[in-house]
Picture 1 (cartoon, rainbow, N blue to C red):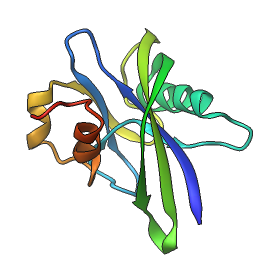
Picture 2: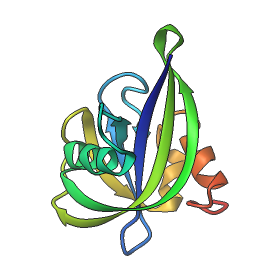
Picture 3: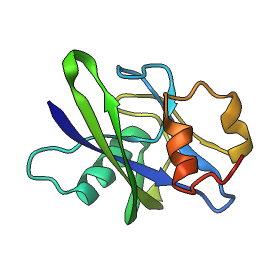
Length: 132
């Protein structure tokens, strides 16, 4: 079974990347791009905005599609994750919903973080992080 999910790739004015530490499986305890499942009747843009608001407290405008990855889940589930660029338009950063923490990270800090499998590879492939 495939489950459609979305993620929001958000950078601040200093070039830092917004990540959340996941509170629940999959990848509980690891840092990742904020996002989650697309609800019935929701389009990707609405889902990205909702997930970022729920997980980070931030309001965002949705930008360009960045890329898609598949992640295996329990019981043969495949999470089909469609990531979009997003820009903060309001709110205050705080961890919420299924995020244990939410923070901005400079690209040079990412190598030492416990990050969910494949996240940094995908971001590099899509040109979000460059070669660092």
